[in-house]
Amino acid sequence: MSILLFTLLVAVGSFSAGLLGALTGLGGGIVIVPMLTLLFGVDLRYAIGASLVSVIATSSGAAAAYVKEGFTNVRVGMLLEIATTVGALGGAYLAGRVGTAAIMVIFGLVLLYSAYRSTKPLAEHVSTENADPLAVTLRLNSTYPTPNGFQPYAVQAVPAGFGLMFLAGILSGLLGIGSGALKVLAMDQMMHLPFKVSTTTSNFMIGVTAAASAGIYLARGQVDPPLALPVMLGVLAGALTGARVLAGANTKVLRRIFAAVVVVLAVEMLYKGIRGGV
Image (cartoon, rainbow, N blue to C red):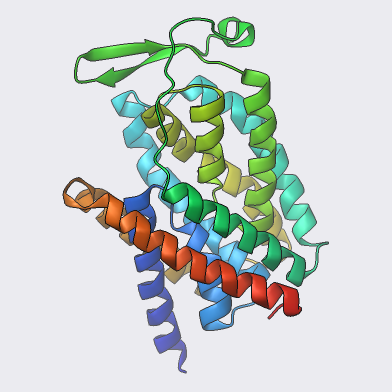
């Protein structure tokens, strides 16, 4: 295969991953690493490095709009970013110590969990009472826009959410993903933030988390520009296209398609990992 054809195919695959990721709310990074390793034979750690670059690009592109619209809770994001950044640095360090086969098995399990979450819409648990004392001290309680005006909400279980964010950061640095599914789960189900606030705050955070671990991969020489560039451009274009067609798309069907693709990739990653890596 020529370099030009390889680059073109990687860009097309990344576009598809970004499109599906935007339409399902899980981001394209979860598909990029298995796609590069299983379909294109790219070294796992170089695939993770390229995926982290794409996560930074897509997060940066959408985060500003969500902050401007008033959905993102910047104070919550900045607090939890401490945990995810430390975790991401630890995950990137572990990636240089843990064997490829083990990383593939962990990735396969995370893929299965992401597929499960993509088919389970989260219920709202918004509350305006019984805020966590730490949330009051740090002024984390806020409001978000609704058709009936700005709705206030109180933030719950801050220490528990902080701890789960540390785990999300480790997975991000170890696997090259945004860990958006775990972050949204922590903020929505544990801290009782409104769902739209959880997803937009997660998007605000994943770029910073990915940047922390990407620096370690860059220092180790595992961010290859000829590979990272088509991945980044493809995922970004797919994510922007997905955001535009989201209103008219049947997200229920798309989530099932996405879950099916992710399950296939998960099984393949687990199989390769158990057999000893690629």
